[in-house]
Length: 219
Image 1: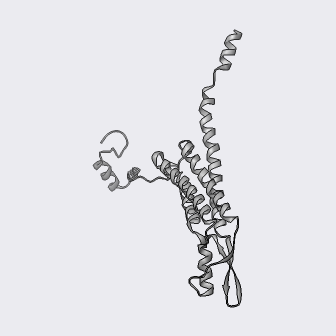
Image 2 (image 1 turned 30 degrees about the vertical axis):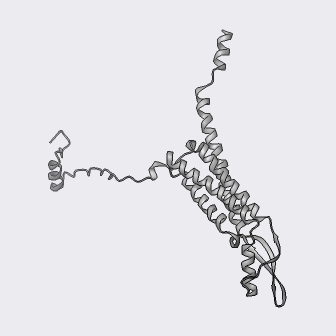
Image 3 (image 1 turned 90 degrees about the vertical axis):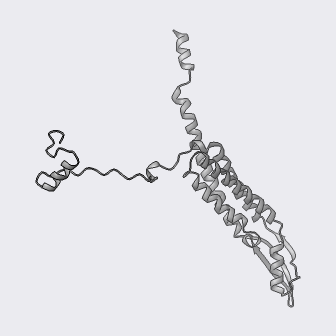
């Protein structure tokens, strides 16, 4: 009897096994939403900050120059917006559509990282600003310095990438938009209007439909 009790205790409960994927889905969903939303916010914020600074030589001396991330490259901010749209769209599609949107989310994050890192040492925007300030198209910026904001934008892209990878791995376990919000092309069945015995036109219409207006049996 003791051996039977031990065997029953050791057998895994079916409900426990079924609940494990659901817990993994909820946990991965929460992490993906947090990483995706935070990554988009960080990438957009970093793109508006000062990425580089320098000076331009003008008649009066050295003129200070600064450029923001959006001046250097608009790719990180644009891809962050695409990633946000993909993060929302993940819940509106199913099966293969969800797989494609998840891949788009991951690619948006990877592209944000690549664009931000490549823009960290880009002096093109500073040179263009120096030429504009000095009035000399051949002028370039001097005393150039770069800030850490490009790498902050890259960190935001890495979070978006992580959200996309989680969607690719666990997206099949995530909930989808409720079917009651999806409209179908089929017309809704109209409820039959009750027959008023005091109205002759209702009686004739019921007879035309093959109904018994008295309710006692078939017409």
